Length: 317
Image (tube, rainbow, N blue to C red; front, side, top):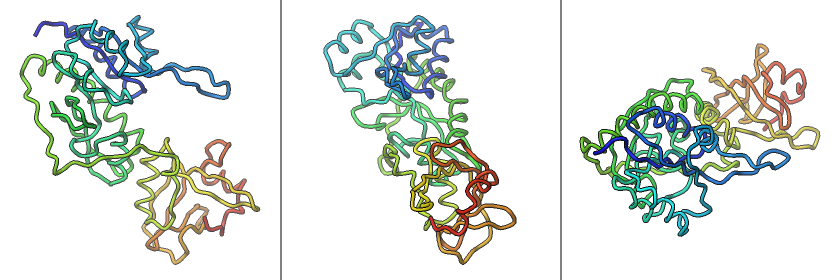
């Protein structure tokens, strides 16, 4: 294989950024262009905002391509003209058609933050946290017509601690995966890695998270709800509705702590013990609320929240 590798980078969110940086910093990789999603309206003014990857590409004076459709003739012509050795895909956000996968001589190398074939799809880190896994990891793989079903090139494992959150787990993946991508790219391009098919008997698929997925069901046990709080913040967040004086208020539960004690209170009952805020949960368990955010307000510690909303005590959520 001749170096530097001719690479087109597909990516969109913040998660993609360290991978693009790693490619740019390696002398054996030449980024021909960056493909990212269209600018999106944001904020009250609905101003168009570029993706994090586009912002990096602009700063590095890289060619940027933002197609309306990956199936258009314009997209095919542009990508064909680059004569890339490989496409690198990190959280681009859309399925890539077969005709595009076939363009580079070495195919499309994708980064997926799970130990495939477990947790295919858009929400692997959340799924690992929700399941209470002790470890997860990252897989470097080749894309095919399915969703994260292609043969694997490399994997690396990370350990989850008992307080792991979506954000802390993301940082762990970002700490190891960019280097794994670079080393795997070079070995694969040099013929030193034989792609390994995934074992379908161990496959599982995650779904795209919707806002309603964050609504708390207080009938679930405390340990399950604690995992949900850690897995689903910042999106879609874990939230509950409190009817205060006939008005529904959405409360976002931001940080919680498990209690080893049991209670006879009904699930969803808000109570105080030793100046700590608790909510009764399923299986006679209860959860301590460490911080909470009323809709339209800032994050509050439990003590701060109780100073302004003490009438919540005794409510059933």
